[in-house]
Amino acid sequence: MTYSVAVSGASGYAGGEILRLLAAHPDIEIRTVTAHSNAGQPLIEHQPHLRSLAHLELQETTPEILAGHDIVFLALPHGQSGQYTDALGDVPLIIDAGADHRLESVADWDRFYGGAFHDPWTYGVPELPFRGGKQRERLVGATRIAAPGCNASTVSLSLAPGVAAGVIDPSDIVSVLAVGPSGAGKSLKPHLLGSELLGTANPYAVGGVHRHIPEIRQALAAARVPDASSRSARSATGDEGIRISFTPVLVPMARGILATSSAPIADGVTDADIRGAWEAAYGDETFVQVLPEGSFPRTADVLGANTALMGLAIDRAANRVVVVTAVDNLVKGTAGAAVQSMNIALGLPEDRALTVNGVAP
Image (cartoon, rainbow, N blue to C red; front, side, top):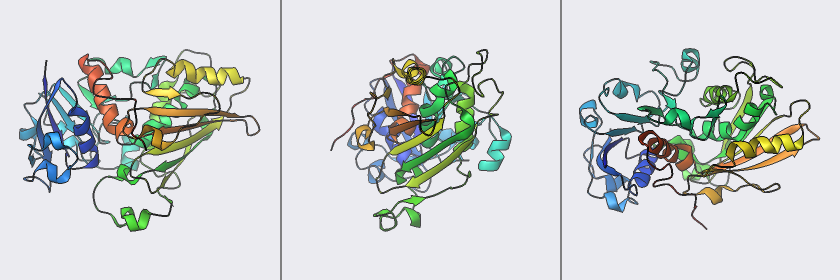
């Protein structure tokens, strides 16, 4: 069966990456691409690397144009997807790459985003531990999927095995991320100009204000095993007991996230318990891989790939577990996660149109 697809926000970075992956998908027909200010222009003018899609023209983003497809991808700025999803009830599968359907808490939405709150959808990070299983199980047959925030999914994947196994204390998480500016979107902003980025590293959203913080807390809370005996804060309800200091830093690379996350080791936990928790969580996964002891990833290793590579260190002097994870923010961080989740929802091979191989040099 071939599924017809519409992609909104197709002239942006996330929309362009979704199109790049779907263009190689044998079960997908990209029928419609839409935009706002760029509507009426050829897609190829804004995505010149997508040569196989040169025949497509950007149309207006309206419910009428998006309707009538088997699948709709929304790659719109935060706060803009909900107005369309409310009007697309007849579309069999919708995948939102924005934040509108990620958060379960109205209070968190009001604090970090503001505007109209929309119901949460199934979270599109298949490998993420979820209450004794994996998020993948919830994606089977899903009709509404919220693709993750790239920083949020990177940190959540990094630490969820430790939270699920109770080998770390999630009340004192520290994450510092080196982030490429493509994660901020394609709109022109002075601080994202090449002359402002080259030769420097710039922290932003410092001090607990980054919008991905509640998404991380929500994901880590969902990783807890409800009925297991508690070594740490695992038995708490909601995201109680999960605290994170989160600091992203813009660095001069177009793509990529290198997240260094750490948390205290729970009492009585051995080194074998710690490494065993991560290996048990991801040992059978294709797209999330734990590197051998003593090895740590580079962002160059995941460029263009749907992989999250992570290195694990046990710092007994500081009594902390340190996890270093690299992803391509536009692939595994956004578009790859969306396509992977789509495959699962439709019952297709999970890795269809996705690769573990990066681009080098």
